[in-house]
Each structure stands twice: as structure tokens, then as C-alpha cells.
Length: 393
Image (cartoon, rainbow, N blue to C red):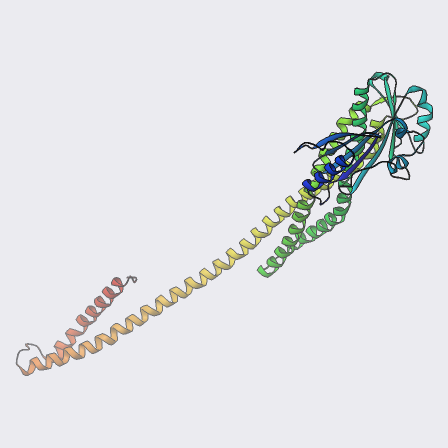
């Protein structure tokens, strides 16, 4: 069985379906029903099956008769097959050979290019082995030795083996992203530590504005990386969970001299998956720290603004009191000036009354008596005007 997996490229789903349907018609097979995400067709070399997933597409060839020669490499077998056009970037090539127990020793010799892993399946009724080392054509070879399992169960095991290799590689797609953002996280952490040190010594609003600009730039970078890596790290977690689920049945040792497939892959994949988890957690933690730093910095700026506002209000209050005292002084002088002119008018009036013989008092005495009365009257008039215009009494 040859299994190929491809990442979904830029080709639209309907265009991919058109190519697969054209491939089926060209080989005398019926195309897939409308809306189907998987389909199988019988070709002269065996059964061909394609399946669409969210992020990848798989092609599987179940070869038979002369097309399934074990002595030929997977690359040689693939070259003799007719395949649909590649739908996207190549991800996985797996060669799964199903053999009988009489061929076990010869089969295992083909996977001894590295550290071999072997697991017993179904209580010893089958055995699977691989070294997970791609050959010159890029295929990873698996040997499935069948003792007495039915064909249906063998098909299920073949599918599980293919999915282990596919999901193992998909889970590792997050590792390059984790390696890329590692230096970025360290750079921002150093910058944040320096910024917090500067925040302790912040003395003025211009300094606070400069710190806020630096902090905003760091926050934008972190949020950009979170948005950029969120899907990839989430997919890594999901694929890692699926991989562990598929590997759960491959943990029975077949020999004390070789690790099981479960142990073999767990030892090699776990560090990469933990690296992705750690980098994702570091990004989230760094974003939270930047948010706290932003809150502290904004509080410091708000405090500085409040101090400036209080100082400005105090200055305005002093100016208001000064203006009020000046106004009161001017009002007092205006009362005196107005009273002076009113007393003059009263003097003219009293002099006229003296000529008419109506004034019973001497004119100078009458003018002197009118002075305090006029001043009081003018003060009352000014007070009424201020009260009418909302002034202070």
C-alpha cells in the first residue's frame, strides 16, 4: 500500500474535484458523487482512494498482483502508476507492505537502516515494524506481518499506520514556527525588562509618552505573532492528540531488543510538541505581562496628568481670587467716583433751592449731610447690579 499526503494548496476545492473526476473518467471509473470528500476507484493496478481533509488531501494505492512487488522500492512502484495531479505541497510518503509470517525475516531486513521499532498488534496476531527513515525516494517503509487477521482488520491497521505517519508530520509543522518566534520572545522580554526599569525612574509626561510608544510597539509585535501562530499551534495540539490516540494500540513490545512504535515516536515527537506548547504559552504570558505594564504606565501618566491639572486649577483659582479682589477694588473706586459726581449734582440742586428760599439748612451743611447718603445709595445700586448679573455679594 502506497500512501501520499499533500497539504491543501491554493487550488480551489471545486478545481481539485474537477481534476479527480477527470482522472476517474480517464481510467474508466465513475467520478465521486457531488459533495463527497472521499472516493475509491478500481484501477488495473489495484484500488485507488482519495480523501479530502481540512488541511490536507491523501492518495492511497492498494496494489495487487505484479504491481505489489516487495523487491521493488516504493519510488519504482510509484513511477509505474498513474496518479492525479498533485493538489498541493507534498507532506508524507508511506510504503506499507503487508506480508505473511514466512516473509517476516526478509521483510524486516528492509527496515534495518536505522533504529528499528516493532510492536505486536491484536494479541500477537500481527506485527508492525519501521525505522521511520525515508528512503532515497522519500518513502518511509512500514512492514505489517499478518499471522491470522482478516482482510478487513488488516485494512484498518493499514489506515492507522498511514494516519500515524500523516499526523506525526502535521503535528511537527508547528516546530518551525516555535523556533522562529523563540528569539522574538526573548528580544521582547529583554525590552520589557528595560522598559520596567525606566518606568521606575519616570519623572515627566514626555518620558511617559516615550515609554508608552515603546510598550505599544512591543505589544503590537506580540499580538501579531499570536494571531500568526494561533492556527498552527492549535493544529499542532489537535494533531498531537490524534497521533497519541492512534499510537495507543502500538504499545505492546514484540521483542526486548527493540522499542515499540509508541515508545519510539513518543521519545522523538514529545520534545517538539512540548516546545510548541511552551512557545504558545510564552506568547500568551508575554501578552499578559505587556498588558499589566501598560496598565502601570497609564496609571503613572494619569497621575502625572492629575498633578498637572491640580497645579493648573490652583493657578486658575489664585488668578480668580486676584481678579475678584481687583474687581472689588475697582468697584470701591467706582462707588467713590460716582458718589463724587452725584454729590456735585446734589450741590447744584441745593444751590438752586437756596435761591428759591426753600432750603431750611445752610447749603454747606446740607451738602455734607448728603455725602454719606449718596455713598450708601451708590453702594446699594452697585450691589443690586452685581446681584442681578450673578455676581458675588
